[in-house]
Image 1 (cartoon, one colour):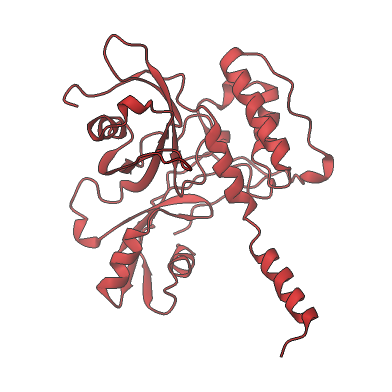
Image 2: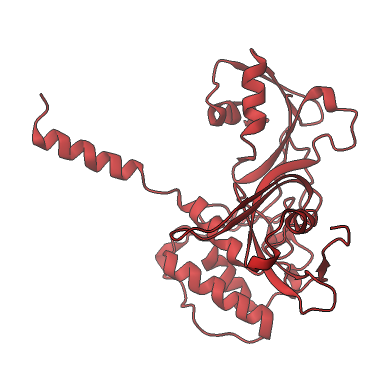
Length: 313
């Protein structure tokens, strides 16, 4: 029988293992940016390569999938069973180094949507109770992508209502995290928030999945203070409180043009910087199945260090 000390050691190890990935926590929190709030209003419808190693590990199918890299940079995967292939497709979305990955069956290669869509489950927040209806939710979801499924869970005494749509998001579109929506003609619009399950890296300025904020066309328009806040908000060595304060102040500057002064400068030991030559982004062919990845050149990686990515394949 194991001693009490051994039991305590195992419990401590289990707690360490359960610590959340800081990168996931950061990018989940960054969905609180009111991205899209300043864009045109939506109106509801009237009729109411390492890739082939990393991904099988994520799928828990190492040894059961073979990968082949194509000349165009995409990757074909060959599955032993149809069951495994369908399971992988069902559990989307996936990412590689934080950037989203598009998957499709090879038989769909002649379709215009081949490797052009990523399925997301999106929670719709702040929708008034009276509008929590299937047709209304489906119409709102259609602004995010092609709607496959609508799920409405009514509230209980211990749980709030949940409104979710499963959409096929076009990889050339921009993520919207907040939008004013005219639900009924002639009535004031309602501001809704959208939270994407499984979403990690995206451009914090325009919402693109194809590039990071430091190569976005909006980048030159940023104020110096916004640069500082962006570094804090995306830095895994910052505390959650520091990151949240940075995001809050960033939103204030974007909305009013003035700083709220709520975020404090990072301590020097939080970041290490290496100077490298800057490279403009290349729209890499993402990853049969067949896989394509949305990834771009970026100046800052997960550890806050400066770097240059070079397209593989």
